[in-house]
Length: 54
Length: 384
Image (cartoon, rainbow over all chains, first blue to last red):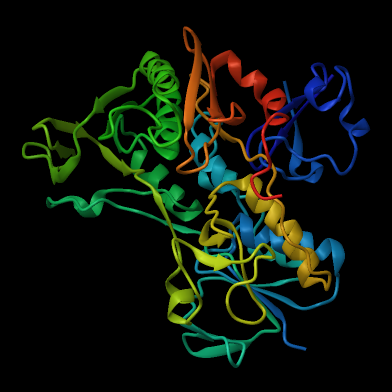
């Protein structure tokens, strides 16, 4: 399980937690999130996220 | 064909380029910027100490890399002298540039309060990456910072600088944190969170003057209206932002608080558009990334030949104060109604309902921020 951070606003997507409120189940891999999904905090696209090392 | 000219290389300018290039690979694009043209994200400037990133590390790409990646000409250090909307021409200091369409992505200026004192010139504001670099340099080896203003930028910097090991004093005349955005109990929660990090608040007085220290001219002394003298190494003004409208106004474009546009981001002259912090879109001045991104996507379509009005959905604002996380969906101005508040320590859930009982805004702190998405579904879109 990995975490991905929005480089524009710092929002973190945690694969383990998913985003159930948006219909993204816990455990959803980054690659399986739709390409048109946008950051819930600032609206940038998936291309503006990078993987965070833990 | 004349190029599409974009003035400004902040998030508004570069995201317009990026979104446009997804639709059109060929039409010439020119970005004019007074800055150094590096691509960076302004919201990250108030997280640099927490993330241990210098100005150079916050830069995501050089102007050359942006130029190559998006097939765009980036001209840096250019101060635009004027715009001739009749001739569709941007006037440069020793030259001019004709445009097919012009995009004003000018951003906002920090507003500095009228201060007296011999050290007024030492007061920093951090409005772009270049400012941030100078600010970081001034803080090198220093310990104490005075922040003027307890709004979004002031509170974020107070949190970030505290995380970086600085002793922060914060002056806010309106008497609490985030007074323009939050109801009182939520402000109090943020205040407690920051106080626990060591931030010292001076609520009530205004800053009147900044002097060099009498005994130690390396120090700055901020004089408050209640007679308090705050000594620190660095003073940061974070009072507020004013949309940059000067060149638009001089060019005869209609302006109010910002550059006036319709819902398709069209300013009041043919083929001129505005977005981001400088724009007032159907009365909305929203200096945040979420509306800016929606605008960049709509404008990219319009510029690519498919006229597209921008829709603003629910526009919550996340405030980066990890000591007490905050998300707020501001209440529309002059709307009558009441706050309902539930409080548990630094967790505050405040809901604003209008006279009909409909949810019209909220302020969430601490653990309550998790309820954001659920509440967004209950709120009406800002500009459908």
